[in-house]
Image (tube, rainbow, N blue to C red; front, side):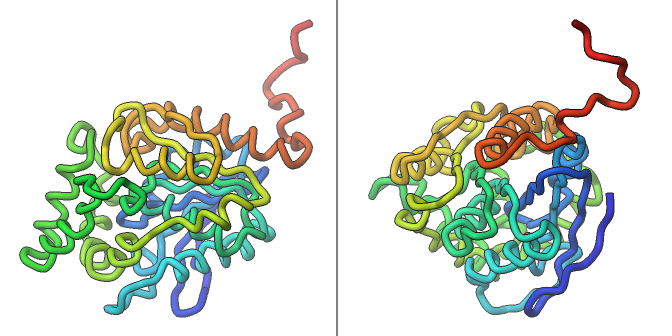
Length: 287
């Protein structure tokens, strides 16, 4: 793994790169930390150049401010990373708020996206009028105003299936706690107001797949993926596990991502040479 800080307009973005092969940019959700993807990135690094980063203002990246942050800024950061680290084009995976950033990137900067997997974007504005899930962002914003990040953070965890059933890495958890005011005070309005650009996404010149976890069926953050897929006419798939299965069981989740990312890449280009070669330790293939 190699790491560094990539300078963009108004911020330095901490990033980690693992492996060689087709570029795969992984965008984190709430907390914006590259550490969410450490396990899955290690697994996929045998086939992809996996790039993960701390989103602007989170963890080891700079650029924190008091002003609400637009999704256009988040997408511009991702575009700059692809241009600077991946030769100008990459497959993109985003989870949760990272899927919202990925959908925004695909709409605003399609030239840098080779394919997009959007996993459980909590795009509650696409839910039907009167759906209780549409009040999620407003509820947590009110809790943050009344009780600060501890109150909002507790409610956030309570609404996310599977949280509390596994342990986060200690350093990741510590960084996440330090990001909560940035999340609820700065990033929240952008995520709350998100509506996918259906026209741009329908005309995307690359494959787009929406998906959600099998254990999240029916949740406010899983159902929007189905509706977005229907509206823009792209496939929807069911992933294994929970909202953050890549933390609970990275091997299981990586297997699902590998299939989608490999298929997306080979739709538009030849199978890379590294996928044609046997491992050095292996003998000739059996007849």
